[in-house]
Length: 190
Image 1 (cartoon, rainbow, N blue to C red):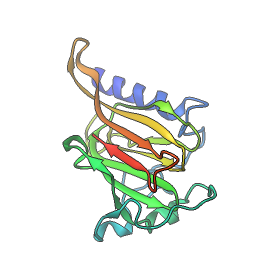
Image 2 (cartoon, one colour):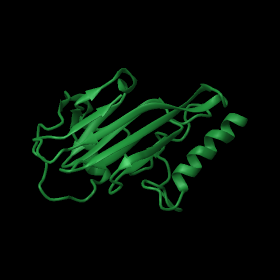
Image 3 (cartoon, rainbow, N blue to C red):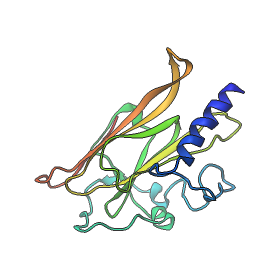
């Protein structure tokens, strides 16, 4: 019971905190019958069956575009990050125009945070518990990649530590940067 309360509290704070990028406002979409995502947010892309393309396979637009819709994400191709470590092996990345979505469906996610960099367009989603589990399993981060951008995002999980068996521990760090004179951005997850 304590575990369920802790997980629900963390998810509730992250999902409902006003002013937090990616916060779910009151009246946010209900979860789908498939479980997990809101009705308008796809769990997987139709492009999952295809091969991963290089992150910069398509040119990045010169001007900022609007955030992709759920329908657009369904057709977004999978892309290969510049570098991914073993911790991010179960994660998948998708790109639509200059927007990147990194989804980790099997990671037990306790929290996500932007440690540094531009906040514009950054959004987080933590899946609610499913399959009888009391812990949230799965989550994603979305952000635009534009020339001159730099950001570091941390995804946390639960694990044993000084605060007991449900200590918040770093699981994956996503780093994105596009230095002005570089031809393409660098995005890593480790």
